[in-house]
Length: 141
Image (cartoon, rainbow, N blue to C red; front, side, top):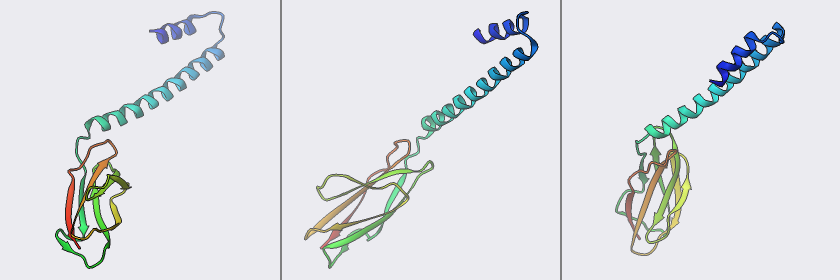
């Protein structure tokens, strides 16, 4: 409403010459173009965030489940994927706390193994906060 009145005022204001009117209108048009481009970018990112309900996937590629290791240090490797991108991968072994190990689709983590059974857990999160199911394997030393 304000903009309509302002443009009407510019067009019928007898105190303003034509050059000033055109400059003022041009500035308004540029301002509106920038404003709507900014608004459009924000709406697009909000729409993507609201419509992305697809959880990422994650898998442990090495070693295999129920692996018997002769060494007490082992590198765990895996892959993760998502339609909008991986934000982080969380890793946990046995009763230790979760830790963030990577933010990409290919990941690895070296760990010290305990004698006996070791359970390894991983979970991926995408850029919109969707979480994959927790994947796990068991390793024996």
